[in-house]
Length: 425
Ligand code: FES
Ligand SMILES: [Fe+2]
Image (cartoon, rainbow, N blue to C red):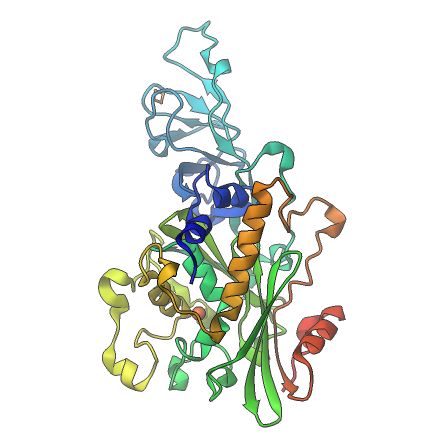
């Protein structure tokens, strides 16, 4: 269990909170590039870290992320006109550029200098992997945007979606730490309903041994299941600061092809946006991998959601899937985490051995928060281009002899040029 005070520390994300301040030190996903597809396309609302914002793409293709409320008298800029390199408020025509500079105040006298005295809140943006990343922290400590391998792929090798989660970001991130639930929550009894992963993931050993170790980017997690008397089924996944889970997908066969990133970005204390970034290194994404298309609506709400009980089918639950909610992992995860309530009170929980990596992640995050409060530089802020090579964020699936030390095995893989080609049957 977690004392109330620590629960608050890990779930409150506003600008004046310790976690909110830590989150603001990193580049985080703000929206999909496709939401503002072309120059001067309509602006969109963005709720992020407890702030109401609007995003727009200006005439030159640059992305702006501005405080939603006009600096003049507060009308929403969502309704504004996106024209000639600026977003113009529809009330009195004040016009703002992507940096928040006031370009025009047409209701003021021609010689007015008011526009030079006002600076509208604007956050810097960069685009990579079909996502607009934004930085909310102090200008002088802005890090580089981390150069993950999936940021340098052709667009058709990536499948990126997002969905609103009606719960705290931490509930989502805890799911990424929790390899034990793979064998249970996502279990399917029929091949037709198997959403992904290896048969060994669902095999008899539903109580994997789990280990989480701290790294310079977050937590590396190793889970080991007994596949048979002489073999271990091993998985390596990662929690990457500030809010990402890097998870192997596609099982033993798919290990060399790529992995999946789930980012749990706080919208506010009670809501988060889950970004799903699925990539394949050497081939385009296949139609059958686009499972979210039928699960997420145009407003980024889920078709199956808490209000409609995730359209649970009790007959299917008896015969085909553990949940009765179809084959898409996103739906299972959402039910598990949203049904806890918007902010779960962790003073009520009863943790077991299967929660070891959840505990390790919380401990690490609390330490990061406390260190940042004491003025220490947070981990995984990249400042040197030469060090922006993040291959050690390994996601591995492999079968190894049970006589082999899993930690030793992983350490050896990480030394290899292409660790992902080492999975063995
Ligand atoms: S409220 Fe926006 S210009 Fe007046
Ligand atoms: Fe899951």
